[in-house]
Amino acid sequence: MKLLQSLSVFASVASAMSVDLNKRDSPLDVKIQMVGNSVVEATITNTGTETLRLFKTGTILDSAAVEKTEIFSGADKIPFDGLRLRIMTSNPDDSAFQTLGAGETLTKAWDIAQVHDLSAGGSISVASTGFIPCATANSTTLSATPLPFASNTLTTTINGAAAALVRRAFHSLAERQVVQSDCTGTKLTATRTALSECQQLAAAASSAAASGPAAKMTEYFKSSTTATRGTVSGIFARVAAECGASPGGGVSKLYCSDVYRSCSSGVLAYTLPSQSYMVNCNLYYTALSSLGRTCHDQDQATTTLHETTHLSQIAGTTDQGGCYGYNCVRSLSAAQNLRHADTYALFANAIYVGC
Image 1: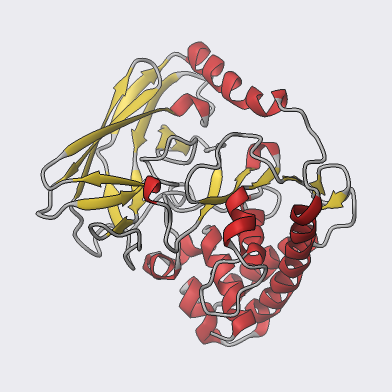
Image 2 (image 1 turned 180 degrees about the horizontal axis):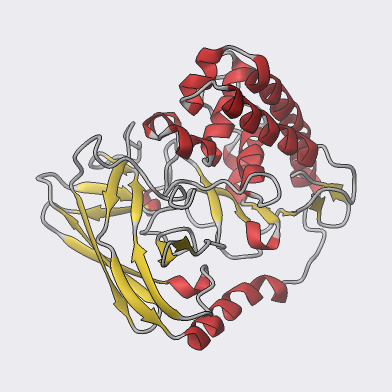
C-alpha cells in the first residue's frame, strides 16, 4: 500500500450477508420494495413492546454506501463493490442512533446500482439480511448481541443503461478527488506505528492459525481443520506483507482525510475494495490507542488489520451485514467467519493479548 506519496501502507455465493436468523427472535420486521429502476425502499417496523435505539452506522439505516442488499441474477450473485467500514463499538455518539418506538415504522431507501454492476440489465432478485446493533433507552452503550433481520425477497427487471449511469457517477467520485500527501504530523506518525504493529499482529496470528491451539481456532473460526488453518494463516500472511510493504509497494493507498465523505458518526475507518484504497477517519486518531492490551479491544493496529482484510487482493472480507464485536462473531457460522473482517481483527487481538 502507498500512504499517498511518501509512506508505504499495508495496508460463498450468499455468505456476504447471510446470517443464521433462526437462533433467536427479533422485533425487527423488514420489508423491501423497488422504487423506480434501481432504488430499494425498506420499511422497518418494531414489532416488539419496547422502544429500540438502533445503531445506524454500517447498517441498512446508514446513508453511506455500505452493503445493504444481496442481489442475484439467476443463480449468480452480483458482487458488492461499495464501502467496508470499521465502527466504534464502545460508547458511540448519540447522533449514531435512531429511535424506533414499539409498533412504529421508518423507511430507508438506497440505490443498489451505485454499488452493484447492474449494467447487463434484465431480471434480478433482491433481499436484505443482516444485523442492527442497539442500545437501551437513554444510553449509548451497545447491547452484547445485535438484532438480526431478514427481509422478503423480491424480483424486478432492471434497465441496464440507466443503472450503468448511476454506478459510473458514484465511482467517479473518488477519481475527482485530488490525491495528496494528506498524512502529516501526528497522523503520519500514528499511521506508521499502526502499520508496523499490524504487520506484527498479523504475522503472529498467521503462525497461531497454522499451528496454534485448536481451541482458539474453533472459538473464532468454528473450525480447526487443516483446510481452515491454511486459509486463515494465508490471509494473515498477506495482511502482514501488505502492512509491512516497503515505500511504493503493496496494493493499496491509505488516506488520512475523508476523500469519499463517509466518516459519519462512529466510523473509525473504511475501505473501497474496488478502488484499492483505505481511509482513516478522524475518530481513528482521537478515540483509539495505538495497540490495546485487553481482550477484544479496538485500537489503531487491529482497525488497520480489519480494513486490510477487506481488500480484494488480500481476502475480500465483508462485515456480514453489520456484524461487529466478539458476541456477534460468535453467532456466525464457520463459513461466515472465514469471510468476516472483524473475526480476523479479534483473533489477532486474542493471540497478542492471550485471551
